[in-house]
Length: 370
Ligand code: GTP
Ligand code: MG
Image 1 (cartoon, helix red, strand yellow):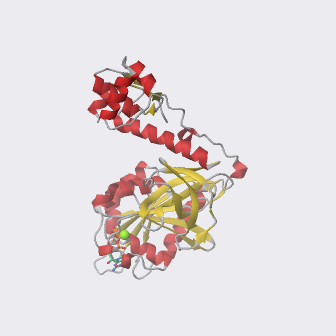
Image 2: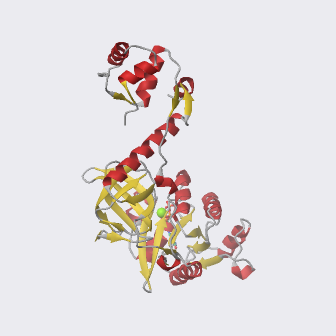
């Protein structure tokens, strides 16, 4: 993605090409007169020569952000609700999800503290629900905020023996900021010192008034440990989902968000993504943030290999060239060439904004940021 050749750059700087080449060699760049230089190098040269340049960078319209697709009502089909579990540390979020899934994730966690967003799908009475588990530790505010972005419904878990705590309040505010329906799960009611009414009282002060007190927030008493009240909670989730009629068009190229990503020693970059629209298929060329790739393999939350994944499905994918960031949008394109060019444009835009470059900058502006 050259911007000007060495020759053109020399002209721009009012220097001889040979001077520019010498300077480049001094900077450790072996260059010929027809070689294309990128913007950073041109700016560096200008700085070396003490020349002020004004850079105008034209970035082609980045279709990735601006795609406006309109689905016909008839194309929209029911999809599972995405439900995010939030709440204060140790109030029992992962245990609750374990109980719902009848597995045992929480006992396998280091120190029993969740440090990432977990994504799972369960099926209840032939209706699917996608759950996201978030960490309650105060250090993970960004993950809770991201969880709120990804979701349709929030479950706020509050331990009945501990009551409303700082991250309970934080979770309520994330859910409210995202305009999400909230269901409160008052957990640990098996404990002798459990006081569910105190939780209701305290949450009323934060604007969540129980239905039985004349408000419109659903409260469900549960014990994740003794599996009490789980059915009632699931019923409430399905009820909220039914009222809101969550829909998506599964018959188009997939789009969604990266939940988490990391570099795996043997498999390379691995990303857990949530498909929000369309259907993701093995072999699809896609962009995730500034990265691109082609889906090599897709694995469900239960470790099963999938060929395709429709709306509201969390899947783990491989086939990326780099590791995207959590929260990055991903989108499938017609072919890998298109995906690559979009990813590259996004990388430039990103670099510009990292450098504080808009469309016009002077070197002074730029060097302040280097
Ligand atoms: P973070 O993810 O770190 O925020 O914690 P968490 O909210 O996921 O809590 P977790 O599920 O790890 O549970 C914390 C502790 O509470 C564990 O020791 C659980 O066994 C216990 N616990 C969870 N639910 C219940 C419950 O209903 N009753 C009782 N008695 N203990 C529970
Ligand atoms: Mg947890």
